[in-house]
Image (tube, helix red, strand yellow):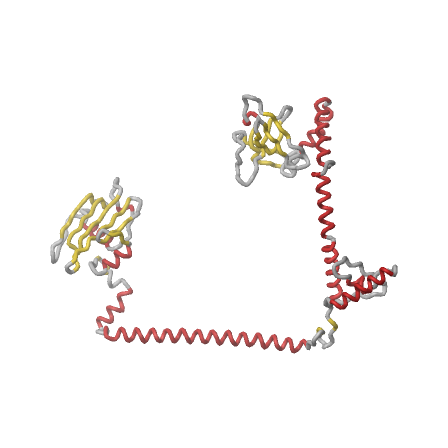
Length: 413
């Protein structure tokens, strides 16, 4: 039984308290007086959906409280709704969910409205109502147990049928594979063809390799060339010699062609150390040795730059060289868009270095820029070009030298 109801800041209601007596209680009033709001407040206590629109204008939250009597016990239910649409529910002072309110309300109260009866509209109550009408409650438990047993048996039967279907499919696959093997007419050490005639498989044999290696050694000691068999297969661990074919030789079977591919691959692998050594020597010649090519080239370009300060006719060579210092990020003749508002050395994006337009003594250049002490370090993209240093004059900062960040590069085609 609902004995007490308090509603605060809900819709048009500022604050109202209603006490209900045992028996029939009737609320009357004009249209818009708030009768339906009291019913809606009780619905919210039963776990109804809350909305921030229900909160009274200019109020932060609304609250509904009710005291129910259930037997000899009293149950205090409270629900709070904020203007943002969040709500909290309490049962006897402890937090509860909306689902918990619905479970509790089912044993406390029912709401009857126009074309609405909550119990009859709930499908979960239909079977119980039919059982009660037909006085079938004593049969409910035995029928439920029989139905559960029937359902379990049906599931077990379905599993057995799936297992048999899988077994039959596996049996068909194995039968097909066995028939294919029987039809291939395979023999130990030979591969059968469609007509039953096979040829010997080509596979590495230790004894054959030893014979080829011995024959090759004897031939070399005698001053002759490698035998044809040794030339065709090559000794293990060494680079095979090319196979010499006479004009009358016919193309070999596919297995021989595959064997020749393997020999070519073995030759590449046998030369791996030499390839690595040649790469290291080339890298040292370019960068690391005392007579490194790029180091000498940098010295040459420094001399050309000095010549350009003395004779203007050398300036085009310096300009052309500077145009390639940022290759491939920046090509000669490209148009760059400069963000003059960003002249900080902090990365604009974490994954990318910033390119800047920087003022130099004669002109403006585009480089990667970083600060080291009282100097600006201008680094090119192309490692073939030298790093430039600009001394920061006293009383100046990096912003006095950086025109801005390069934010876009376009090339006319």
